[in-house]
Structures are given as structure tokens and as C-alpha cells.
Amino acid sequence: MSEPQGLPTVVIVGRPNVGKSTLFNALVGQRRAIVGDEPGITRDRIHGLAEHRGRPFEVIDTGGIVTRDSEHIPVQVLKQARVALDEATHIIFLIDGRTEITGADRDLAQLLRQLGKPVTLAVNKIDAAAREGLAHEFYTLGFSDQFSISSEHRLGLEDLLDHVTESFAQAAPAEGAPRQTTIKVAIIGRPNVGKSTLLNALVGQERAIVSSVAGTTRDAVDASCEIGGVRYVFVDTAGIRRKGKTKLMAEKLSVVMARRHIRMAHVVLLVMDATEGVLGADATIAGYAHEEGRGLILCVNKWDASPTQDRKAFLESIHDKLKFLDYAPAVFISAKTGAGIQELFPRVQEVYESASQRVPTGELNRFVETLKDEHHPRILYITQGSIRPPTFVLFTDRPGELHFSKERFLINQIRQRFGFQGAPIVIKIKAKKPRRKR
Image (tube, rainbow, N blue to C red; front, side, top):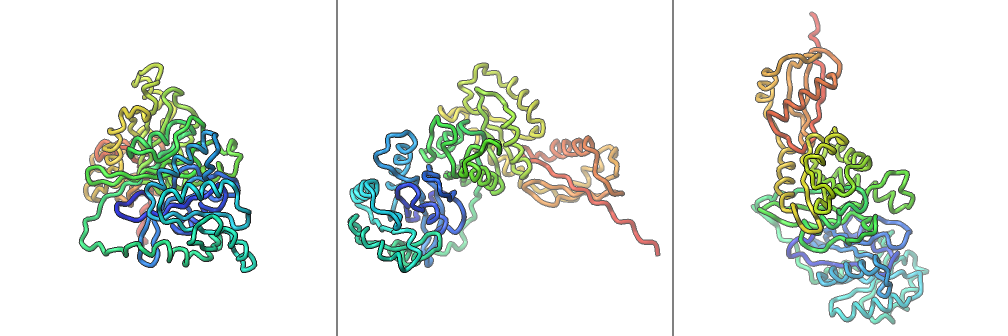
């Protein structure tokens, strides 16, 4: 989740592979960050909400910080971490208690002391009494507030949180407050099509690391903004590769997590690269959203760099290669320049409302009566079973599925009559049981 107004912010920092993501997941109570043994798995800032003894707060998990590394990604990680530290109410400096103090630890300690903010040193991976003695040497880093913990086994977290949240306010009950519409939007696509740039353009801040290196985003990074009384929560998922090409553990986990975020979203933005055209991988990734029944918008990114600038031809290519997405609107944008970005907000709201629409049963049955009854089996009765995706249950005179062409005709007629733009429509058949003869 992302930056709720007025909540105190706890930022977790440390060098790579000390257990920051494991601590983050323990605090927020859900698996938001990818956890593994490869150093540097978390590169972006991951946000979540937590509560301790009735005190709500926001948690930010930063990428592993290497202060003197000149490689592009570590420099960007440090830049992202500095943004998070500027927002921090309290900083948890996490360190691996099973290793000796390194030069990187001392450099980071010096950087944190210069901020003038409350810092608590959490010595991680102290999961047995025999290891308690290992923690004492870390007082030489110059922080008086120090706690021994094990993020993996959730040891020592209560004492740590008692200290960190001591000055945080108790949550006030919100009675009679109007419910705000929150639309969760997953940004999906192949690696390096501009998903992170789009996220930053949508929320107006540099939240995700933007790089020309394919596959920079491994975790799902989210951010929110509010427009016209609607809160939009955007999740930038890792670039999805074909399974055969995802050899590293972190990349395989990224695909699993990206598909999970698609399931949790209300609306999905499929980002395509206008300079490369519509590829088979785009169809595969779009299929994930379609199978999950999510509302869908096609975002043709980098349109300013398109060699032809022929929208009609590009739309024809989309309809040719993504035939099953004929219901999804396409928006031509440039995340880099901001062109077309504002058009996405009303489109997202429109698709969300379409996918959430309910049609009264009486109106549906009057609509079916106006159709030429060419369906076999014959439709006796129709009702809408659920929303997101809009699902219609047809009671027929005999068992058997509708022929594909008949089902497609019915879906097209439902769209023409009731809308449902951007939402896949699901048809289910139930045969009416014959009456028993007495």
C-alpha cells in the first residue's frame, strides 16, 4: 500500500541480504516482498501498512544499500533509499548478527547518524541464546538503541516494535466517515516496456527505479494518488518473461508474484512497446489478466518514438494478434514525456465501474426476449451471478454448452446493450431440471 496521509513511517535499511524483506513481511503480515538467498533481490521501495498495540504506521522496505558501489543499479537503490529516509519517522538499521561488521555497515551507520532522525539498530538472525553474545560488538556502530531479533522466526519483534512505535499515536475510530472508492491497478508487461516509468508518471513521483536494464523491477512496487475523490493504487509488477527463460529464483518468484497481483487488482494496464509492435509475449501476458477476469486497458507506450505514428494500423495489429481482447480499450501514451497519461485515470474508473456493474434480472430477461431465439439449447432464464468479472448464468432447456459462435453473439449483444467496456464477460450454462412425473 502506499503513503496514507498522516501515518508515521518506519523505514528498514541495511546492506544487501541481511533480511530486510523478511522483517518487512513479518511486520505487515503478508508476503509483499520477495524473500530469497540471492543478495540484492529487493531493488525498489516496497510499502506496506502495519499496526502494533493499536498504533498504525507505514513500513518501507528499501533495496540493499552499498554506499560506494558505482554500478548503475546500486546507485539507483541508494537514491531510492534516500527518498525513503527523507520520509522516515523512525529508521530500523538492520544488520546480520552472524557476520562481522563490514566497511559498508560503518559507512551506512555514518550516513544514518547525519540524518538526525531516530535510529534503532536491529541485529538480525539471533535465533538462539548461544548467539546473543554475538550482538554486543555492534554497539561500536554508535547507536544506543539496539535489539536482537530473528525476522524469520519472529523473535524479539515485540520488544523492537514497543520501542519503535512508542511515540506513535493510537488509531482514532472513523465513525460515519464516507467510504472512499479505492481502485487497485496492476501494471503488467514484458521487461523494459516502461512499466516503472509509467508508475512514476501516474503518481507524479520517482517511486520505482527506472533503468534501461531489462528486468530492473523484481518486486511489485506500489504507489497511490487521489483524483476526484477516487484513490488509485498502482502496482508496478516485475516484467514477465516466458517460464523457460526465467532461470534465476528471483525471476521465477517475480512471475508468480506478478500473477498474484493481477488476481488482487481491479483493473490491469497491459503495457506494450510501440517501437517493437505487438509480440507473442504480449499475448501470453494479456492472457494472464484475461484468465483472471480482470478489467483490462491496453497501454501502447513509447508512442512518441513509434516509427509510423499510424494508430489505425497499430490497432489492427492488436485486434489481429490479441483477438480475445476485443473488449479492451487501447490508449496511446508516452510515459517518458507524460503524453496521454491523464487520459488513463477516467479510463481506469470507467473500466472499474463497467466490471462492477450489475444488471437487474428482470431487465436481463426482457433483453433476451428481444433476441432472435437461435440458441441451442434454448435460453429459458438469465441472471447475473457476480461482478468482476461480470458473470451471467443461463438456464436452458437441455444440458450442453452454447456453441462458441452463439456464446460470442450473446456476449456481443450484452456489451452492445449494457456496456461492460474493458471487462471480460463470463457465460455459465445450467440446464433446467425436468419436472418429475407423479
